Image (tube, rainbow, N blue to C red):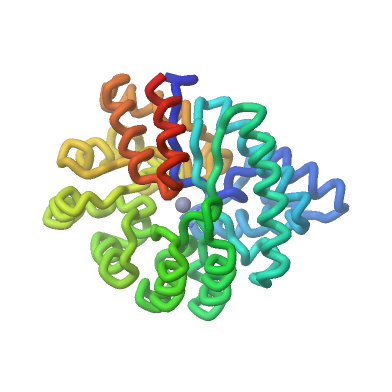
Length: 325
Ligand code: ADE
Ligand code: ZN
């Protein structure tokens, strides 16, 4: 399973930064971000809300387009080592130039160049989904959506929302999602991770998204589960993230098995892999152990993910050939 081809749809770029990479950058820049690492050098946090603070502290050392280019290189190396052949990553103009469109373009160009180099080297294909950050509020989200609309195309393919799901309501962000949709971007939203089933309904109804980031707490409302299955809504499930953050005690207790059995289109991703001590290879291995899922199931999950990918049809058929090879 480890090296088999995989498709990943839910990966936060900054959240994928290896701790040694962030420490190295902090040293180069002589900035002190002490306290965010444990004695073994891993990220240290107490709970989800503390995780968001540590995430933002680590991100504070990424201050130039060059830093982000190096980050893309480091992250794609890790992904390729797990067998990932196509990845969609969440990008935040909040952290890349403070939502200024001109600055954002510079960050984006640097990241795209690094991704093109990685594709030449390892064959891995990357596309970007711009995310606003819920706890930064709807006003900043509008500026983020404008950055997204300005740079929408065949590389920036989607728009979404991450951050603290307990802050505000999906409908507060409707303008931003409408703006992104009008620019031709495909839509996803984090919901049903820290919010219950209603948060999934709200994301679908108020934002018109076609994919849900996490969405796993839909399992608490079986009518919603049936609706997700009927409508073909795709869940970007990140089991290792949910276990690491204490949503479920272990993989066996994770609802991905039930969601799959009930016909929901589930996919598998890592979210913020070094924070959760995971990789795509480990996610697949743990699912195999927990649910006895075999190559046939994993092939189906990858196929579902590629179908739900936001890239253009030509890219999809190119990836499809690699997946089937
Ligand atoms: N940002 C990074 N990881 C996240 C997660 N799991 N949920 C919400 N926002 C995030
Ligand atoms: Zn996420």
